[in-house]
Amino acid sequence: MSQATIFMLILLAIGMFAKNQSLIIACAFLLIVQWSGLGDRILPFAQSRGIQIGVTIITIAVLVPIVTGEIGLRDLQGAIKSSYAWIALGSGIFVAIIAANGIDLLQNDPHITVALVVGTILAVALFGGVAVGPLIGAGIAYLAMRAVQFFSSLGG
Image 1: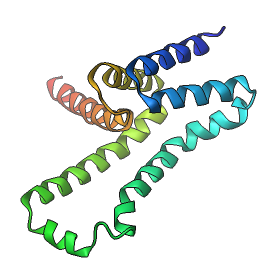
Image 2: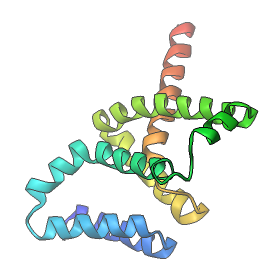
Image 3: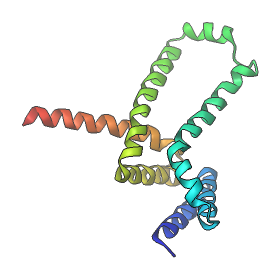
């Protein structure tokens, strides 16, 4: 049994212990793909396009209340009058910008990816977190790393 398989089985066990359906499905899917011999075709595609597909699916889910009429222009007009809506707007912009930097970090720095994924899994398993952490976490890590880089350059 390879290290990769053992690692995935550990993650599957953590997902089952934490009762995290997303982690269970993801681990099971990847193990089945690998064991079925389809890994050489499917895994490179999933690695290169998976985040984009996932973000598209999340975007669709967020837009459903608009297309069903549950949220309309009247709600948007009401939101403009709310200070909390302006805070949410700013937060959405901020998170989207840092997540964009996080995508590059995840794709170009494998050891950071491992740390972020393990951190997300621990948060899901131990603290009831939600597994959207790697992308946002990568964006925050990117900002923190740039801050460290900036302050390090000032000192010497």
